Amino acid sequence: MRSKFDEQLELLKTRLIRMGALCEEAIANAVKALLNNDLALAKKALEADVEIDQQEREIEGLCLKLLLQQQPVARDLRQISSALKMITDLERIGDQAGDIAEITIQAKIEAAPETKPIAAMAEATIKMVTGSIDAFVRQDLELAKAVIEYDDVVDELFIQVKKDLIRLINKDAKSGEFAIDLIMIAKYFERIGDHATNIAEWVEFAITGRHRNGVGK
Amino acid sequence: MRSKFDEQLELLKTRLIRMGALCEEAIANAVKALLNNDLALAKKALEADVEIDQQEREIEGLCLKLLLQQQPVARDLRQISSALKMITDLERIGDQAGDIAEITIQAKIEAAPETKPIAAMAEATIKMVTGSIDAFVRQDLELAKAVIEYDDVVDELFIQVKKDLIRLINKDAKSGEFAIDLIMIAKYFERIGDHATNIAEWVEFAITGRHRNGVGK
Image (cartoon, rainbow over all chains, first blue to last red; front, side, top):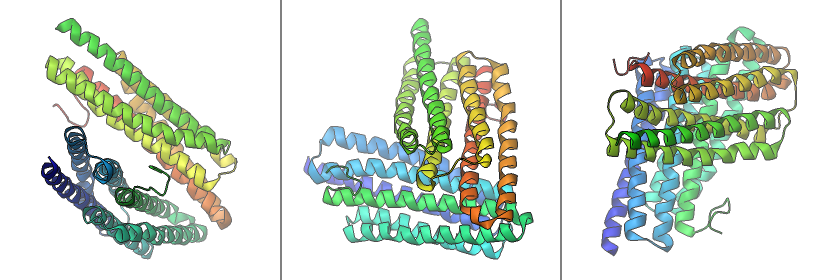
């Protein structure tokens, strides 16, 4: 029974790694599409959303099977229930990468100095997604904490982007549309950071049995 | 067999009406919370998202049961598969109402003339959600078409909100943060309109067998 559970848990981790990789790829494609105004790549980021939704359903099924058939307790139970929550945030990350791609498709954003911090936001959020999944797979509490702290970097970048673009609009109303589109995209990256933070918090819970928002206390 | 299917289809419609009503309530609470800076109500809109997600899973299960047990064909099959797609858009609408509520909670938006068109966007999108679900329940092709056309009203309002707020930021950078939050909220309402449009397009497909984006052709 026990070893069967470990086997299935390994499978679950492999599936989570794949779903996380899909999200990272969607973010990377969305920002590349944005910076190079590459509509084909933007469409690819949009399509990835469908595959990510499918992954969520499959992993959810795997988690439910594990819960029902193996009736895990304590830390094993926390790992499965955390995974169930994590995939919801991964799915939202896929949504947001798609939202970014959609703005790129509709808006035809030109390369501009203002897009530089957006690239930094993309890099930071990809790092957070990778870290949060790795933290679960390796049950690495320190890495989970590091991901949660790293969200401040994303929030700082978002505040900076907003300031820069407000200044831009204030100077020149004609660039307003362009600036608003970029702010919207920055907002989606900020949300991706929030979701990666949620994932890391569930990893903390899986390991410690305590969730900083009070769950399981 | 046949009457059993009709019975289950009625149940499906009842469930869709309830899920739609939850989404409309979430939108209404999110905008009321925004206009009255009512944080308790904003939290309620956020919490509704969880219930809406649950509804999606249950209705999805009902649809799959119908597909497997009844093996419907032709228009019956289209109705079930359309319902399967519709709940994905309803779920996203719940997400976006929650996103709006979150900005209200974080930003403490004061009542201002700029919030007036936002209220209009909320009213318009609620009307679209109600209409799209009614169109499915009554299999009303004209109503579905009307919902799809009505999205132009929402898009127009969004363009207007953007213009007004760009002008505001251009005049006075100090109101930039406030303006950006409002633009973000307006963007979420614009997305809600898109999702209601998707729903109405699936209703068209359920009735006619033709989807304007080419599905089923």
